[in-house]
Length: 542
Image 1 (cartoon, helix red, strand yellow):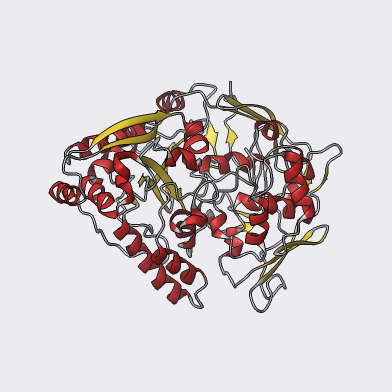
Image 2 (cartoon, helix red, strand yellow):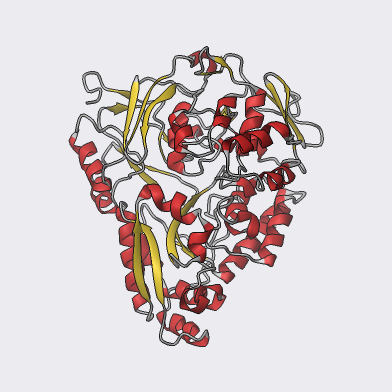
């Protein structure tokens, strides 16, 4: 619910309604992966003076009339943007994608190092933000913000679509970042505002009177009210959408169950959309800091054995089959620049047993598998992994958890991994931007300590000096060709070390009820844009 901290596609989907960024993705089917101005007046270029000659300074102007729903309503300012960026590395719950830009924005790492030492107290956090300058992000005047970079980055405008770069009003500093109190008192600069919020149960949004359509080129906000019900199972959601239940229009953190997809595809159901993702979702991640089994997962050879033992074909089938879940055998999906197809671990149970024996585990292992039990895909994947690894002499025990707790109480909490609460889990990753986006895979997932949670999403705590060096060199390479070569090397090295097992670069299935019109799929949200739909006359909710 916190714009500067949310790092999950469903979080982005919610923020679309009440939080705006400098740039975002439009609800236009053939342009939904091309960033456009949102709060910003225009895309900065060297020609319009927005980018300096050396490519290291970006100057961006915020739209006049974009306002917070304060009383009275007030202009969103460059100072708000600076506050928002500062909040990303707070000591309570930092943004999970900070490795993307930690060494890119001038002064960011130094600012965050000091911030990490601040007590987890709202007043102390506010005092630090207000008294410490972030040299790489400055408010030139009320509506002009200046970013200073350590090196040129042709992907920077695309990076600014991240909610981490959302402005934050001064009122946010009265609450702990990511807290329930902040969620219940969130201010909005989007077309909707939060009326009520009950965690894991319901979010009710109503029109924001401070929002003006003339200041927002992206959102239309046709519907008057949005009610998010978080208590319904995946199967029940699908049934209600297909049968025309009045109170069911769009999915929310629940997609068509894999078991329904073959039938929906076969009958060419017009309410089903299969959209690109540019993702590795889900993948199996190995907890390299788990003390279980005498710290077996710290050893690459053990992780390699698990990779040989897992059957990608079976997992793909559990996720709806290759039509919606084409296999992925390495880090970078094929639609990301620098991707080259290879497979180091074709399914081989005999090889898995041999490697386990050579590592000192001739009688196998017992592993704890963390998964979201509300998801049919997760449940089936767990059962498939359990069955596949059993053939190699490995016992898998399930650790089911609610969707709402999976990241915030488990994956993003280092002590949970280090205590051995889990050994293996399912996670998912989507590109933070598109095209030249390899950095947004390697920096948050595989770049060593800077990518460890909660600041990053390297949930298995993988650390390789070789990969770390390749990431650093590739991200600051002088040419695209050089960077793509280095990303390719990094991909092979990660797979050689086997910190995770990729499964698929899926097409995202989404389903909407028949009364929903203009449902445009946004890959970044892996869902339909709720601010651009309308409902058929006479069928407007229940």
